[in-house]
Length: 209
Image 1 (cartoon, rainbow, N blue to C red):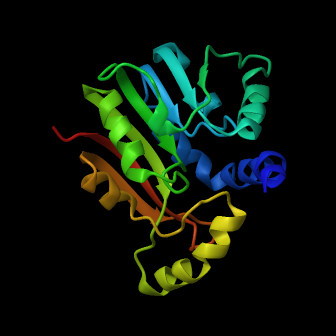
Image 2: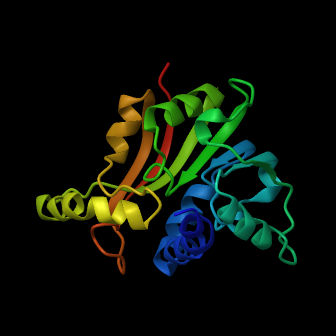
């Protein structure tokens, strides 16, 4: 399983998450980040070319998987894309940055695969300044009962093949239940993606103090 996760899974995830119909969603999320920014689940670096680097003071990329980091560093070193990125090779809940020190946390297609959702979101709340924001773009539980049934049927196999990715997480409710106020939210199926994995939640949220 280690060989699969480190050598086979990274290019598969990179290919799936770089679908052309996801680009606008990613861009709308990532381009809002400024100041001191943490990207949780930076993966293979698909978002790096979408940031407005002139507006970023310092950038931390959180990614525990060595295979993903290797692909991301290759993208980071492309001509004209050598950005000042500080890597944190740990799980999101183990990030050791000062509390209330971050202006923006970015998560794209991350909440589906973290094991400890409550711990990760607690860490995000801890890191964010009082006026900071979480910018997210995630796939999750579909609104239609027929597709929910398929998501639940296929979730065990999907999770095994996709590195722990879950199809059935209700992203908006998870954020609200773990101390966030959603400032704006866009939810819809993305054309060209299978509906079991193509219902997206995108927007921003702030700490509920």
